[in-house]
Image 1 (cartoon, one colour):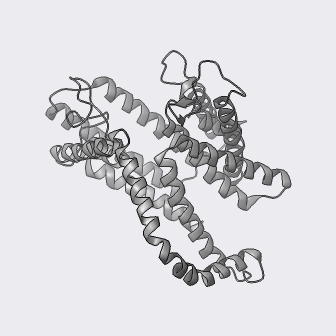
Image 2 (cartoon, helix red, strand yellow):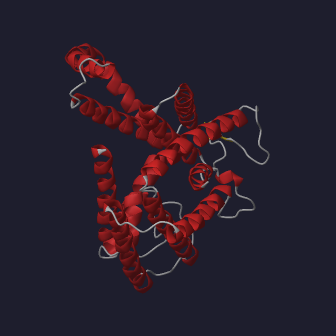
Image 3 (tube, helix red, strand yellow):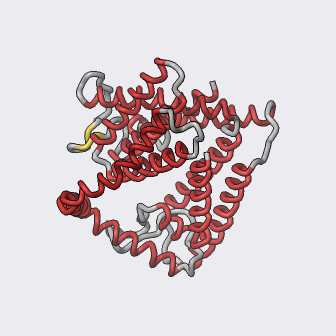
Length: 359
């Protein structure tokens, strides 16, 4: 029951159009809150708290974030000319919820069986959810009160295509991960189906985050997989061993053959990058936001201004008390918690990447 609540809650959280009456929470958030309460009770009543490496790192990260946000809030109240209190409260509540979820997830998913079960459930629920959303987009399974299109971009049950693209990327990568653990024909069909639907939904969303994330993570996955297979002593007689060996043998020839097409490929990449940059002037807007975020972080003497948005002048000019985010996690942390919060974020992200590579 508990793994199902977590998996379904994480999938449905992206369906932000399902929130009723402008409320900041919807069915996904409700499921996650129920999961949080149940898992806390289970931890207190049935499971001893075992502090492994992951638990200690997550706890240390949040301790650093709490201290830097408190220090930043003091600086912000003293230095900033006006305060955006609703944004500060919103971010404080968001940080509190993410803190609670991450602490309980790292304790709960330390159990390998439960972690594996949650992965499989997310693949199943995510694939089914994205399939229903695509069906809704083409009128096969319409959902009242939901508009699955943002102009020509597919957004499903989310409020913007990037939310949908992010969900599709997660489901696609989990499907790829689960493919290594397929034991039955049914599991194989489910993994292949979920991965295919996720790829289709992500491409339909035309999300930059999906395209870039898929390219980078796919290349990293194949590199790590090849290294792992090459270390296997019994690799040679197997299909995967033959694939790696043939790939390495064909690499020099592939490079030579691709040279005549390199200039054309580079031209297409440059053209697509320019189109992405110029679309709705998003390139200039983001550069202005990022530049102001750096200025704000330096203005705070690298301490930050506390939770909430802090940008005011470079984009979307509006009168006080409106402020805006930098739309960049690292730079938003820089404006809120300063350089120490950024270092903590890079450290915890790097630790997770190294841990995944070792696994």
